[in-house]
Image (cartoon, rainbow over all chains, first blue to last red; front, side, top):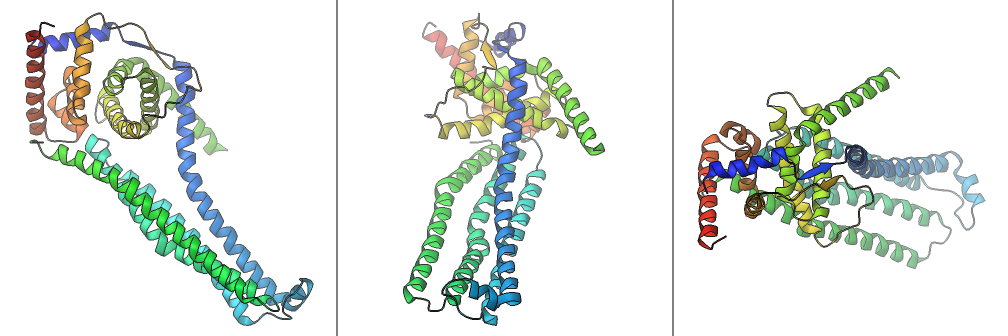
Amino acid sequence: MEFSEMKMIWDSQNQEPLYAMNEGALQAIVQRKKQESERCLSRCFATEITIGMICGALMFLCAVALLVSGPALLAALPRMKAAASLWDVLALVTAGGIWFYYSAYMYLARKRQQRRVETFDSSLRGNLERALSQTDFQIALARDIVWWGLVPVWLAGALWVGTLLQLKAAPPTWAYVVMAALLIGSLGFVVVQKQRSITNRFEPRKRELESLRAKLADPQR
Amino acid sequence: MAQMEVRMMEVSEQSRIFDEWLSRHKGLLFKVVHAYSFRSHDREDLFQEIATQVWNSIPRFRAESSVSTWIYRVALNTALAWSRKERKHREQTQPLDHEPVLRETSRAKDHRLGWLYEQIGQFDHVDRSLTLLLLDGYSYREMAETVGISESYVGVRINRIKTHLKNLTKEEQHHGV
């Protein structure tokens, strides 16, 4: 069969389409899907940013409360010291600052991600480049977030819990041990999860996209 | 308030364009769906995904290419992304939670059309895209723009595709089909 004959066979479906479409249902689904995907990504980043803001504000509030009415506040709570030291206040202010920094870090990450998506053309190659860039971004974020996001947040958590223990009249030694174990354990867990997502999810996707790009670039493949 | 009104007007204009594009070029979408998915549930899923991406692409359309080329480009890109995603979730077929959007009207009268789709389905993504565009009469330049490769490279691949398809038909004839 010659190619011109194949084309005629192909064109026969223009007269008699293989499918019919329910336009009303499609409109509803398109609107729903569009809103879902937009919401999902925004929600993830918004949650992280909000957590950072709330925790930061909470730490600052605690620091101000300790500074302004420390003795009265501590007297109202059971088994607390008579007065907080300036070091306690400083620890809380530092922890608050770190949480605000975390919010800003996530906000900038979101902006970076939005800018990256806008810079590619709409051809198949442009689309592949965009998907590759997005995957690179996800790998970099999963790596960077450990050192530039999670370690600072872990430090803020340690400062917060440490200050609370410090304010107790007679802090038991085991409480420090449990606190340290919990914080180190949780940090370790998150680091392992991030590394797993890089190895099992992002890197295979990257390899697949790179092989497709190579196929586009090399006529002999 | 004024901004909200402008946004609502934009959305209704987008809906109008979407309806128009879909009624004119739905045949093209059906072809991409049929070439990339092989079960009715998957076809439904891919068709919805392509329609969503066509809707999203409307504000980015700058009339630098024809509408049909633009839609083809969006549809092929979506099919590629969908194929990657679908491979991961092949086993997880979920029941539809809405009215089906796509209904098969008739089996192709010419069985050779089914055979052609089967062969196209065996190609890798680049060749599959090029074959669809070729069969729909797009120029090498349009194919090159859609796929993002040079025109000469399109030529090389097209020649190979044509030869391959021709050999396949010979084999079929040889086996008496």
